[in-house]
Length: 386
Ligand code: MG
Image (cartoon, rainbow, N blue to C red):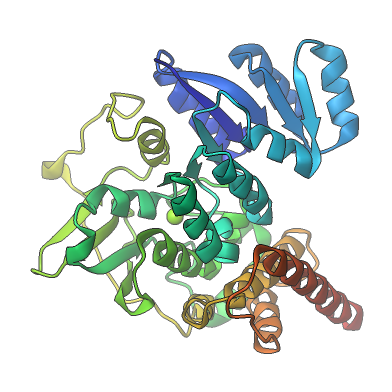
């Protein structure tokens, strides 16, 4: 029987690669619904090719245009549109490939409607990990990781009781070999030029500050129920070892593959099966590239340290970290602030924040909102002074 898939974020990097995986395995999946932001031309192509029953877009205006063009299609819009798609009755799996804060609410809605989730949006777990994981358990919902490191761990982890360490690998980003002074002055173009991975803009900026790795430590803590002290970060510039687990008997199991998102996306879609999809060429060990490993430089990349600190603090500390970082990244991408301001602003907002330790979902959402406003105010005050 075919699996019915809903893709939230279908025109983004993970969304388009999800559709490529589906193309290669098209006897196995139906595309039931697609949600996009404002890339209506690409969404229209996807509608014509995959014939979903429902779509959702960012604005009512775009929704009306699509409704006019495709009268038989159910067209939704805005935050409510995403929630609608997350609870479509015949959906078997919801791919959450939205950027930043937009992932949380539809993920919760999908869980409440007992839909399994392929989670590409790590911010959902950084904002509200305890709540999301607890709810998923309560409703018997699987959260299948799409983030390559977490997919790697998921594939290696067959004995939770014997787990000692998670080893999260990081390419080190585009500035691994740059000096602190050079990094501080980095422009948008060099920040967006990641050596190994092609990704959306927000995550690419996070990869340059290594905040991405910090968010992934928090994500791993929630997904695999492991203490922060038992998560190690290792710089591995070749990005072939996607992450590893170490068991109490000293055995380490790592997942190896080419740096391509198709593999983790496909595994989340086909789990527990493995199918022959896009990646068919074998990794040739005899022609193997050199595998290097280094300790992360926490002084050069203080965002990584800050994220781990927020994780250890728990509660809404990570909600604050995520909100301040995301608003700073968006301001950097808009050309408002310098690259080094991303960390400085995030740190300033974080340091002045008093976290709530066992927050409700309403508290998380209102804290998130409050912190974003504070961050934008701080940015505006800095920009005004300059
Ligand atoms: Mg990752």
